[in-house]
Image (tube, rainbow, N blue to C red; front, side):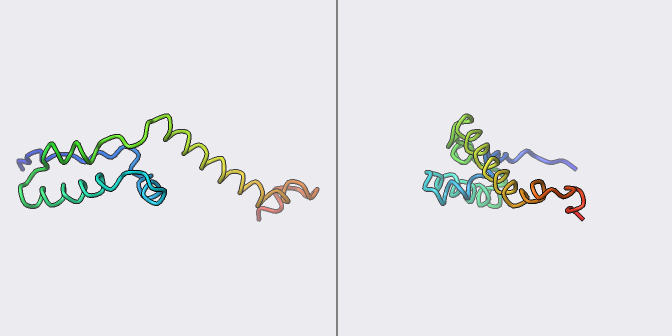
Length: 99
């Protein structure tokens, strides 16, 4: 088979897009460019450079992304600690409470 390269959609921090949209970050152009890329791929067999550039633009710095992600993990860990704190503070054998 001979395949021709059609372009690539590489979305740094893609997993955070939904959160960022809900929080008001300016990401609508990126979402629209991703849709446009699909249309171009079907119609033209490739994705234009302009669409790729828009879709893959940085919308948050790596530093900010790491800070927000770490804050989210810390919050999740704190919630788990609170939820399971009694397992480790009631004087019982912690392993017996996991079964």
